[in-house]
Length: 126
Length: 503
Image (tube, rainbow over all chains, first blue to last red; front, top):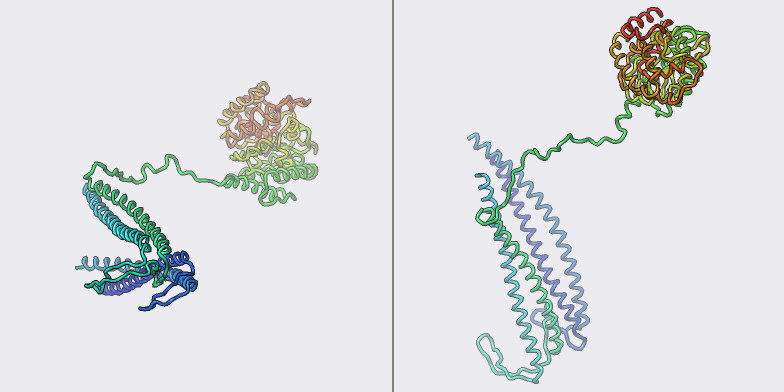
């Protein structure tokens, strides 16, 4: 009895660990996105400071590619939007994962209790 | 103490950990701030460079050639600056434009620094608090945490009982309703009146209904008296029917279920006489025999003074019927169905109306409600035994109430009527009082009547207890006028005699 519970407990713990990993992954991705967001905001603002006389380059690999100022601005704006969307998506995913992990936690605790009881019984018997 | 020590240790551990976490955060903030400060320094240097760079067209510099070598070279295009905007974006701009960008960045850096410093302050405060807590739980410092063990709701209990919030009129009405309902049932059952009442009517409706029924009964009584001897209550031809009806009426409207059977049984034998007497004694105005119904009592017992013989009008113990009792006067109705309306005594005239003996098919006002016939009619002939003691009390009560107005008459009455009154078993003194009050209302003014009844009536008011007895007895006994005072002790016997007579 106790062993069975123990096995169950282990399985549950593994699942829970997995879930936690997923959650942390999502979290980190989200954080990245946030930094990018901040950066792109700065770029946008700085691009606004420039006028059309100066040239804008984009670094693609080892090559600096000339870009139009307006184009650059548009591109940056698009990127900003994209980043925002990604962040929201990640947030929703994170919420779901949180819920799941909560459920798992509950299951784990209940199993733990059972296990302890069983252990206690076993100890008593023994 | 051990427990406390243990808790302290636990607390201590927790507090320590808390403090450590706070300190971590503070450290982190510190490092970030350092970073930003560095950046800020760099940007300031850059600003300086940018300002000086366009001064010359070209500069002779030692160009770094790999990680280990330098070579002499020139710095040209001093005004062209390729600025990394972020996210792999570059922009070629003049020094001044670059300067603008740098300024912009500086702003951002400064913001970051400010936020970090705020966070750091917060956490530093928390750390301080945690430290204090630590010392407290360890009982090392000057501060001591005051702890009180919570008792088992000893003091939390309310002093008084827990109050239950009753909805208004949620309960009390029930009784009344029930009573009325009983009355209704009784009415219908007994008299077979057409008055089919609804299950539960409001008081006003009931009163109105009673009025109607009363009137009907009066008419019926007239006829019954002429035709029937044995009516519902077995009253006399003239009086019996009316009495029966009266009593029947009395019963239904009041809760006196218990009374009814006794009353009816008694009335059967005594009815004939009682009704007559009652009528004689009581009312002159109305044809019907008014029966006194105590509003508090559902039963006819109320005061069927008229019933005389059987008048075992027992006052039901309901105080709820107070109002009824107030309104009701002694009804010498042969009808016995004292509608509440009828019983309502608001003026002295009502009394005469109510207490009317029916003789020969005509309502004759009684000379005295309380009187002798009242003796005969004393209701409580049956119950006199037990009431002997009560009577005394009642008399006293009656006297006490009546002292103001009818003291004179009361004295006389009490004397006279004592025997009659005593036997009446009043359910409670309260009812007597109420009855008394109700009667007092009626007799607020001087009674101007030719008949001796007026004199009797006040008596009636004075000794409420006597009322029922008197009324009842009137019908019963023919020789009531005999000294009532004497009968006090002998009341029992007299009533019994009366009863026997009737039988």
